[in-house]
Amino acid sequence: MAEHNDTDATAYHGTVVPYYGDDPSYTAVAQVSQKSNLAAGIPQLAAEIEKRHPKQVEFYIALGDAWRDSGDPAKAVGPYEEALKVEPASIVGLKRLGIALEDSHQFARLAEVLERARQAAPNDPAVWFQLGSFDSDQGRNAQAVTELEKAVSLDPDLAEAYENLGVALAESGQPDRAEKAFHAALRIRPYDARTYANLAKLLAGQKNDAPQAQYYYERAIALGPDFASAHFDYGVLLARLNRLDAAQQQMEAALRYDPQLAEAHNLLGGIFEMKRQLPAAEREYREAVRIKPGFARAHLNLGALLAERGDRTGARENLETAAQSSDPDAAGQARQMLSELP
Image (tube, rainbow, N blue to C red; front, side):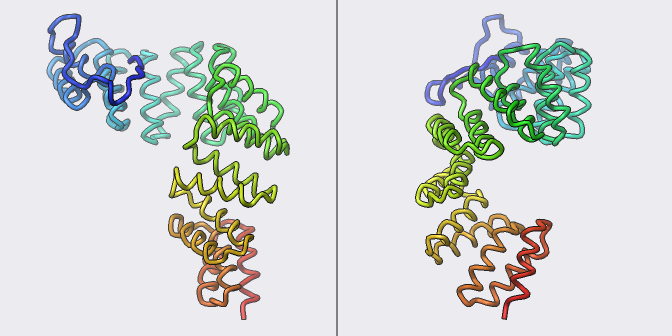
């Protein structure tokens, strides 16, 4: 289905009359194309499919697309599967089913569908991109690198593949190659905030180039002011550089756009603690563990702060939680603090 750029204010959402006749099946498809009339169109199209059992995959794919467009990818899976019963080697059907399975977190089935797609279309760059992105998400970075390199060899203008290739290379400890991949993505798509943020994170971390990282974080935030994770990562870098006021501003910006980001509350608590604003620090640590009860580092920080403020009961409670965590560093520090509590 084609994409469109209409805003909610200007997009048409009424009944659509197709150009190609008054056949009820096509009329139903027309209601969901371009997201024009999803609320009425989805049940209408589903009813027409149930009644007519069409032999064209397009009807099933249109229904699956409509469910995805309405924000329910799990319900898109069935129509895409019906499309593949009609035409088992439909590459469009396989790719759309793969997207729906990923979006609905049905990862066990996704691997099998992507392999079927690869066999059906071994030279389709989008298939290799899906394979590589999936393997990268699953932590299979060496395999992901091979697949994503195949995708960009088949389509050198596939910016998303270069970006994901950069991520896989960075996570597999190849920062120089990762940096080249991110720059390749930006040459194709120079206004993508996420790529700038990924490049900045690489430069701040593995490349240890803080000035360049700051430049790219600023670019990412200028392009995506509501990009919470970019604000957070930039704040981490600024805190590391001991620019506490600037780091605080970035953490507060991250929390404006994602108030449930426990890591940002924890780091903001650390900034307040370093600035000796202890009530504010305690408030942020408590919010971090409220949002994420198993957050060992936040429990450790809160326990240490409460111990300093003379609240031994609260300190012990939080340190015991941290000591039982799977984070070996936080657990070790918590046990040491517990042994030193009076």
